[in-house]
Image 1 (cartoon, rainbow, N blue to C red):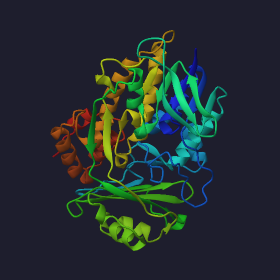
Image 2: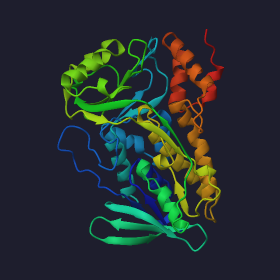
Image 3: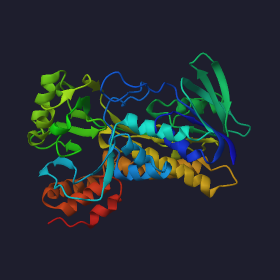
Image 4: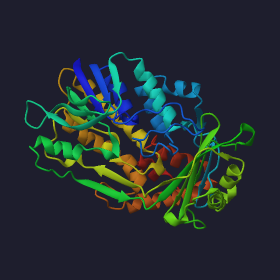
Length: 431
């Protein structure tokens, strides 16, 4: 067994990796730059300053829920025990697309309605039961320690923001799970004696701005669905929305628009925006709800993939996953699933190399291939930014037919929840 592993970032990706590596290292240290929240003073779910989207609702795909349970056995049971709600992505969802409502019927595509803070809390509870895992808050990683071999990582340099000053931490493996704000590109250049290196990347702007807000709904006033999604349509081509139930009778809402000036800034504007979507269903839910948070505005989001696989060399002793490797527009809900799949892949590499250090470069190449699926679903593009017009047109035809065909609707949802590959849609006949 390896002696010590260090994980940069204690968000969802970092916590998932910790569950994977806890049984593969004698000691494991998770370095979180910020601090986990205490019990919130308001009725809204707790937020964490280091997580840019923590104020917004988070929807986990069905494939993600399965992966979480494999990485932390019993994860879903703990989520439900703390108020999370299992729901069928078809029967328990109101999904408005270009041609109307998707049919609501049992699909077997099951995920969980809960807040991001609950997802993180359950993952941390699981790690707290592992005596070899230490989670350290207020630890800002500022660089790598060079290893004895050329171009290798032997640990991290840390700025202890709790008054400990700058320290070093040696590790047999360093995993960067620090998210979109990762300093990995700069840190790697330090291994080349400060010569700045440029890592290829592809960025696809989503063109969407959004706001989010939390509400409370009494059980008697709650709608008969756990999740509502309103996609842009001909009647409202520049607007979209999501509403998701979470624990303790709270509901998260996100409103999206291609023009930031269309988004609401006050209570009446929030309701007016909702009134023009999905046949008024969202508005009917919100007029019965009580706001428990301010309206939070977010800048335009984007999708970004780091092409670590294209580097001729990759540092030994280093792995990067989650948003550090591939960050996706949060509207599509693929981020947590991609992180879980990446963590599971890292575990597979350890299982295949029990007596030897893993091939970190091989892992990064395989991770890029693995991330191709959520990337294509979120962008309809390849990793070079080229539009996949055949995939895009196929989705449009199927979504146009889906309101009248439960089989097509379930197939689309199975792909969107990453239970089936994209290729499965080519086998569906559209009359």
